[in-house]
Image (cartoon, each protein chain N blue to C red):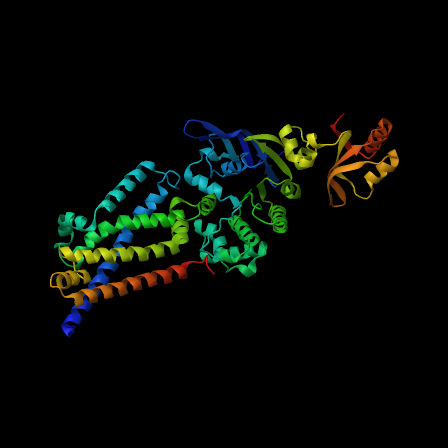
Length: 335
Length: 220
């Protein structure tokens, strides 16, 4: 496998208060490869924002390494760090646009910082605004734009210096669901078309599911689990990952009596009515307690939780049926 | 009462007052800008943290601002004489005016710059902006409306100080008010200077408001 573009080794961030030390991050190891959309998910206070801010040194780590293309950013002198930051665009929850500049001038801003001639910068800004679908609003001020439009300008601005990495710190958390979807689609499009690696920080599962290829679950300042999205989401190995991935409805405390299993669909054909056939095959009704499925290119992805009948023989048949279709049944609870 | 001579004198007072105010305000901003920017970037969570320097500047600014203007003006007389060669007249008044107003202006600028959203500063840092670029391209332009608003406040305060300087040899409307209105009991002249001062203050404030509004791209 190729060298990762970002490699985090033993990262630690300690906040010193009057008479105690608080570790926001401890012993973080992550590898992010070129072209990935890497999601980092965690609850508020888990340290996910601190982590992404340590990647471009907005927050200085107190220990460990952040290697970007093999260079340790923690030890770079100030001017080299500024250079490295230009290879990493960043977008924020609150957009952070310059309020006294038009959309176009905002996009030109990072180019001004590098001393790009004005005409070249304006041409580049026009291209980027075109890319994010805002050509018509080039001369609008941020106060005249909606949240989604502001984030588009912010994305265009982040891309102005041709970065290799785009850091997204809760980039969609201030947006409504449909705007969120369009911004995520844009990030995915940019990743595909320009080959830019994206690091996406979020507290929403749906964001990770929609665009990420890899995910790291962060809890209490540590990485609980990391890997490809399907693997971590559908086969969580740690308790922290389970609580993050499982919807609240599936809290073991709240599950009904009886035998409850989880089926994970990772791309089986959507043409066959699997659950319907399963019921016909065992000849007993099943209760669907929870279902979160979606069709991606003709394949079903997601999870479903079923309550099995009490009858042991029917259960046998269900397991056999599932095995024949390549589906995994995972016991949520035995009684 | 208001013969041609008197009117000419009042007019001269107006011109002198405006001259002192404008020049002093300008010079106060030259020094106050440096101080104000340093007060913002040197604080512990600033973009160029230098807590010791911040502490020193903070004390110096507070010290200078504690002096009543009249006392300060007398205290700096030797310095004024050294710089301007005299201690009376418009130019001599400008020296203590700037010394008194620069720290005040520094505080105004500090307050304006602190209003700039720290997220925007962070965004600039994430794009590799240097400290100097952040000051010149983020802090000052983003705070411009607030800075302009503050400049009207500063000019009006300096105008007030300049009138006070009439008591110890300064020129302008303050001198007229004290010489004629106070020493000679010519109430009408006193009254005229007050009206003129009110008009000048109004003009400064209106100019400030207009510039603030015009420069602010956040309001539509």
